[in-house]
Length: 194
Image (tube, rainbow, N blue to C red; front, side):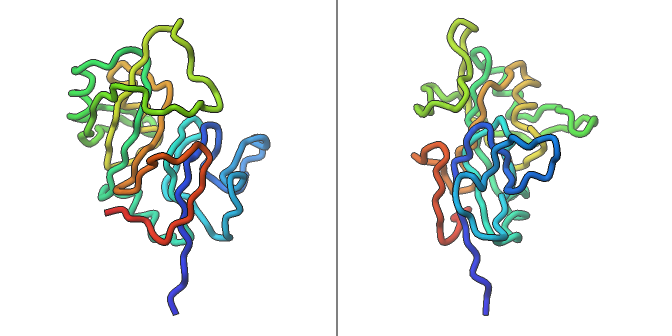
C-alpha cells in the first residue's frame, strides 16, 4: 500500500525561519514554521526562504518532491521591492545573467525573466515596515528564475545596482500565492506544479 503524503501551501511571514526545530544554540528566540500550524510529523519545507524573505513556501511529507522543485525544471517567481527606480538596463542585465558570489566564488546566473511591477502588489502590512518615502523612491519588479542559490535574487538585484528592500515569492511552477494572507496555511491534495 502506497504511503499517503500530506502537502501544505503557506504564506511564510517575514522574520520566520524555514524550519521546524531550532538546531542552533544561539538562535533561541527565532520564529519557526511550526508556530503557524499544527503540522504532521515528518513535514519539511520544499526549498527555503531566508528569515528576511516572505511568501509562498511548499511543505510536504514527501521528500522526493524537494529535488523536483529545487531543480531547474520548475520556475520560481519573486516580487522584489528595490531601492530606487529600476531601469531598463538593469532588467536587460538580469535577463542575460549576472555574476554573483556563491561561497566565495563567482557564479554566472542563468538568464532570468524580469519585468517592472507598476503598482504596489501587496496591501497587507509586513511585520516590520520596509521604510518610508523620506528615504527616496522605491520600485517593484518581478524576477523569475529556474535555480535557487543562497540569497540569489537579492544578490542578482544588488549586482545591477538595486538593493532589495522586500522579497516575496509569489509562484512556484503553477502554484500561486494568489490572495493568501500573511501567515496563512492551506492543506492541499497535491501540488499542481506543471
